[in-house]
Length: 318
Image (cartoon, rainbow, N blue to C red; front, side):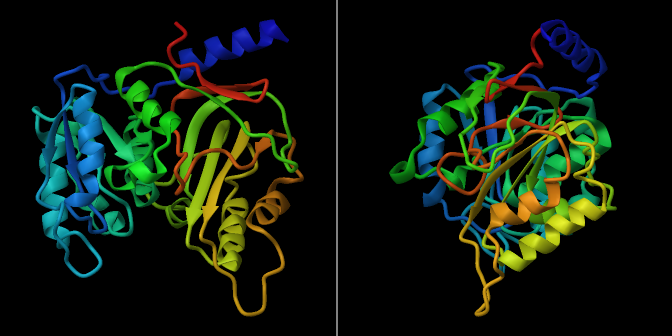
């Protein structure tokens, strides 16, 4: 068994064509922009202090602290600022302010020509799933699924999540314990990490941003969805073949879910299990991913291994 896993690790490294942007060092600059929902300047102060304490410079975009209906700014303004930060050689990584909704309105207008030539780390989750999925599917470039500046709240400060951002940005391979849960189907797996917000993954099917999940470790999470809609989106993933050939499934948080006056009759985790119980790959529930204080950083498209109920990155073994 050990020989098999050594072989599998070597194969995933040899076959993994994912491009990793340069890791950051003290003195590098992180840009902060809001390509979707609005965010106040005060909301990002604590994350900015944390980034500065790590030795990074900060450049705050004009879309922070402004609003335009449900968005941080108009489509043209959000697109222009994101485009500028993607192309600016003085910005070494981009941390998004918040998710919400809006990236799908501008994703097809972004010119990635310079970004492909000189990629940089993009960090975010929720609606940012659209962008992280797009750069991986279209260009094979990894992004980081992690807390955004608007999601850093000292009152709910989580040391592991915060440290994982620094470790991931600076190239230290991460390692996380997977929680025990009565519904877990435990086992071992090796595969490239993909996933994100369930609603976005469902919406992106059959678009240029759609991720091929075959042979991957898939993770899902969501917030504020009606339970019946979680069921519908999981059926969408299953009918599209997204759940058929996984190496493992990591089920994160389903926060602030809603139900109708007549209850749907299943929990979020029961809904997920119903769709994957026929398969034989490992499934882990209550994984620290999503819209909750513990939301650990994961690299999209990078190799990870699950062994002894621990998830760890294997991209740097060579």
